[in-house]
Length: 168
Image 1 (cartoon, rainbow, N blue to C red):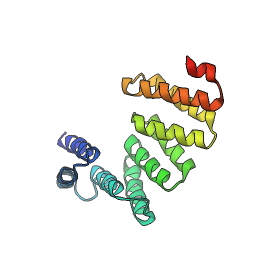
Image 2: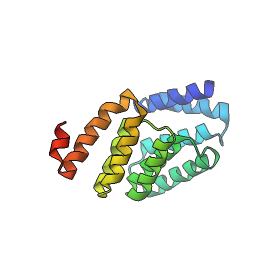
Image 3: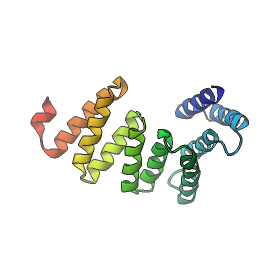
Image 4: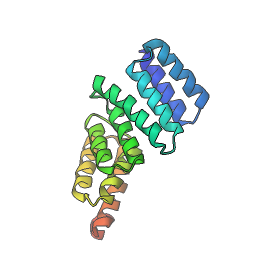
């Protein structure tokens, strides 16, 4: 219970760029779980990701950490989402698409990640896959996603040249 709360607080601090707080929460996670715990390793990868700017060596290290976590928690959507983020940074768009899809299949609901996933599919001219992903996200019925899905659907309709559908 405390571990889950510490991890949530860590992610919140990172999202707000409160680096001192993030480091404190990550240290607390390490005390609870140890150096090889999945939350600590995932948190370490997240922290590294927040500090890198496409440095291939760092990105490879992040992927190594995430692979270790994935082997022990293959159904954790966040791990797949983070792998997708790294693959996107490396411009490995097909791998990123696979990982984003896996993340959503496992319960990922992040609107920003959904936008990235759809944008990658559209940029690769994989419009039917983008449509299926939007349908999948819409079927979840998450209010946080619904408006974003509607906006992405309009963008996809415009990309297809279906202006009538975009205006609905």
